[in-house]
Each structure stands twice: as structure tokens, then as C-alpha cells.
Image (tube, rainbow, N blue to C red; front, side):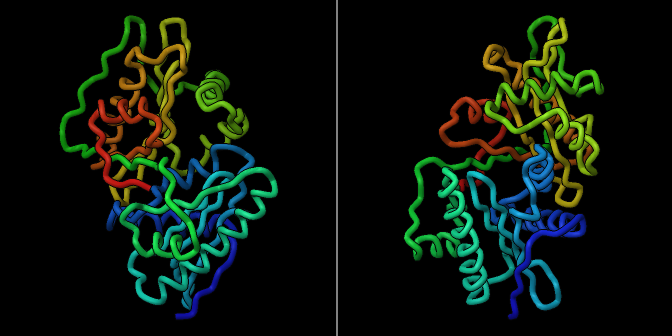
Length: 294
């Protein structure tokens, strides 16, 4: 098989990536590193990330996508079409690893050191990493899922609090400030948030906040839809430190689950760093279970 590689170029490539990741996650969640929400959030959460410089595509001679490498400041993610196997897959993974290592060298010179990730059951990718002297870190990402075939209970909120979606332009600044406080330091800006809200695939009614009686935003999440796989995703999720332990994050997530189910999603997913016990317990409290680790 002839394999060709090129950088991400334009909106057509973005649509191709969306179709590609939807088909993989629909077929087998255990082999999918991506949800369409990851693509949308990854590209549009700030105005700094440029996929033309950080995403590389691999195609066959017919122009069909075989896989891609996504490079960020802290991580290099390799996604290959699971239908490819044998020598073709090994050769493809070697090319992808080589590109990632080139980026690593550049990043280390700039003072950062991105890591590669692999599912614990992705033996072909793990074997390539081991062959090149890599070792698994103790910290890993928990990939969690919840089936939406049962009724979603309402969240229990402190008096005066409600969960709703961001209402309009006059609330954008507070919504951005909430994210920046939770994920400090953050590159998310008001400009980036405004842009993201205009992107096809973003659903305003799934951008949820817990709001106090005086209008303070304390907890939030964005949910993303994939009509192809019927899988919805939570990304990001967060609560201001001063308001944790009050059930606000749980109430926001339960409302997100309810709205995902109402749109026809059959499953919800979310990720948690293994060392973040608070987020794992939050997700477990609304019914999420680990289905893979990377």
C-alpha cells in the first residue's frame, strides 16, 4: 500500500477528520482516541492552536484517510484506522512516531516535553513505543462512559441555585472568567469563546452553568453531540474551588446527561486524569464507569 502524508489544510480536512473519528468510535469505543467534541474543543477553545501546523494526515493512493497525528504542547496522539493491520499498520505507526519525535525535540528545546499516549489494549502502538525505548508513566487518562438508557435523576442544588445554559452575550465574559479560574493558566479568551459559539457542532443549549441567586457562575460543562455514533461527550467540566463540595458539579453533569439523552444520544463519555480523584469521584457519582485507560 502506498502511504502519503501531508499537513492539515482546510475546512474540508476538518470535515474528513470528523467523519473519520465518528466512524471509529461508532464501530469500537475501545479503539477510538477521539470524539468529534475533542476535535472541536481542541481547535476552537483558544486562538493559539493552529491545526495546519500541528495536525498531520496520512492517506492511501485513493486519498482515503488512514490516520492522523495530533500534536499539542503536552501530548502527541496517534489515531489509525483500526481496520489497518499487519505490516501496513506497523509502517504507518513508525512514520507517525517519527513525526511526533521531531515535534518532541522542538518542544524540549522550547522548554516543554509532550508525551505520547496509547490505550492499555492498543498492543501494536505500545509495541512500537517499547521498540523505541519508551516506558509507560504511572499517571494516565481514564476514559469513562455512561449508557443513557435509564431515566436521569434531577440534581439536588443548594437553595437559590439553578442550572441553565449560558443565556447571551452579556454573560460571555463571566463564562470565560469561570473557565480561566478553574483551568489556570488558560489560553481561553473572550475572543476564542465567541468564535467557538459560531462553529457548526457547538450547541448553545449544551453549554451549561450552575448559577447562584445573585448571578454568580460557579460550575460548568460543555456537551458535544455525535449524531453518527449517538455518543455525547463532556468537555470541559469544572467548578470554582470556592464552590466545590456543594453538589454543583454533579447537578451540572446530570442536566448535561438529561439534555444529551433528549437529543437522541445513547451513551455519554468523559475523561479524567487518574491522579484527579475528585473528578473521577464526581463522574462515578452520576454513573460513569471506566472503559479504557491511556
